[in-house]
Amino acid sequence: MSGDPSAGASRRAITAEGGAPAIGPYSAALAVGRLVFLSGQIPLRADGTLVDGGIREQTTQVLDNLRGLVAASGADLTKVAKTTIYLADMGDFAVVNEIYATYFAPPFPARATVQVARLPRDVRVEIDAVVVLD
Image (cartoon, rainbow, N blue to C red; front, top):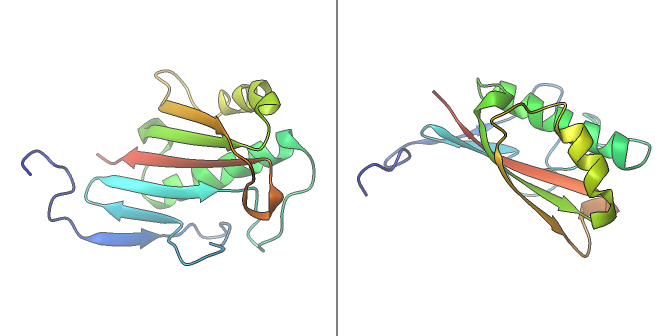
């Protein structure tokens, strides 16, 4: 397929030093050509424990984890093209938006936000992302 930035590209796993561990058989992030696909981040600390607190603390930890993986890929948050936010309760939407806006600046990444029945480890928020490298 012509024009595909990942056509014939090699794949490499990315992990962030001091980042949260994957809790299953997947890569925390996978670079394919100029694209980096970040798996959903939940509010885990580097030692694998969940952060204490509610939606504010969880969202902050998730975005810190996401930022660490983006940095490990050689980019920064301005290179994030798309995110998906998964919420256990859409009532948390405004608080998540407030915190999200402190990590990203215009032009903001494209985004979808959905409420789900349940998230891993019964957390309140999970966020995944796609990064485009220069």
